Image 1 (cartoon, one colour):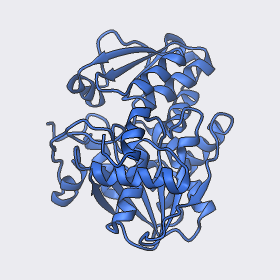
Image 2 (cartoon, helix red, strand yellow; image 1 turned 60 degrees about the vertical axis):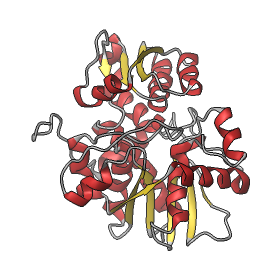
Image 3 (cartoon, one colour; image 1 turned 180 degrees about the horizontal axis):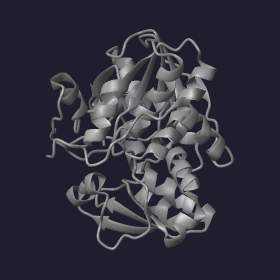
Image 4 (cartoon, rainbow, N blue to C red; image 1 turned 90 degrees about the horizontal axis):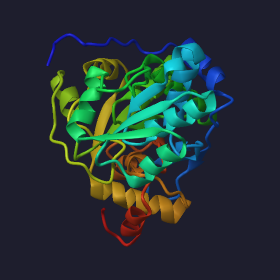
Length: 325
C-alpha cells in the first residue's frame, strides 16, 4: 500500500456544508430526530431517521449534492458509481431527475431489494466480485464505465452533503453529548463530524463498525492503517477489509472514538427498533443503536443515525423470530 494518499481530502467547511444544504433542499427532506423508546437504555437515545429519505437512505444527500454541484454539462456523458445499493440509488435517483444516464457497479453480494430499486430508477447494474468492487474505491476506475464518477464516500461534495445531517442534529438537539455514526467508507461519519465540530466541538463523534469488517478500530489504536478480516453478512451497508488512506486521515482529526458491534447485537437492536419504535431499518441503520444499547458509547444524551431502511423482508422475518440473518 502506498504511503502517499492517491486522493487528498480536507474536512468540508461550515460554508460548504451550508451551501450543500441550499443546493439539495429541493430534493432531500429534513428528517426527524425522535426519542428511542427502550426502558433499560443506558442514557437518552435519539434517532435521526435518514431511512425516510426518498430512496430510503442518507446516501441521497451526498449523491445529489455532488451531481448538482457538477452540473448538467459535466454530466452529459453520464454518471457512474460503485455501491452495494444505497449510493447506487442516490445516484440513480438524481440522474433520473437530471435526465442523464447512470451505471452502477455492485458486488455480487448486493441485496436484491437494493438492486431492484436501482433498476426501477433507470440505473444500469453491472455485477462484479466483492474484491474487484472494493478496489474501485481505491482506484476510481472500472472497465467500460464512462462519465462522471461519484465516489460513495471519498468525495468532497458527497461529504459536505452528508454534513447537513450534523447541522440538523444540533438544531433539533442542542444538548447532544455524543453522536453515533455507522462507519462504512467514512463519508457519512466525517461529514457529520465536520459540521458538528465546527459548531459544537465538545460533542463526541463515535464511529460504529461491524465486527465482521472493522479496520477502523485497530487503525485508530495503532495510529496507522490496518486491514481486517471481512465476512459479508446482513449488515451490508457497513463493513470492509480496509480504509481509504485519505478517509483515515480525516477520521483522525474528526472522530473521537470507535465502537465495534456484532451482527447479533445489531439484529437485537433492529428488533427493538421495529417492536418499540415501529421503525424498520437495514442492518447498518441499527448499528448505532446497538452501540448505544451496549453502553460502550457512553450514557448521556446520544443521537444515532438510522442511516437506511433498505432491507430484504426475509431478513426482517428472521430477526423478528429472534435470529440473526
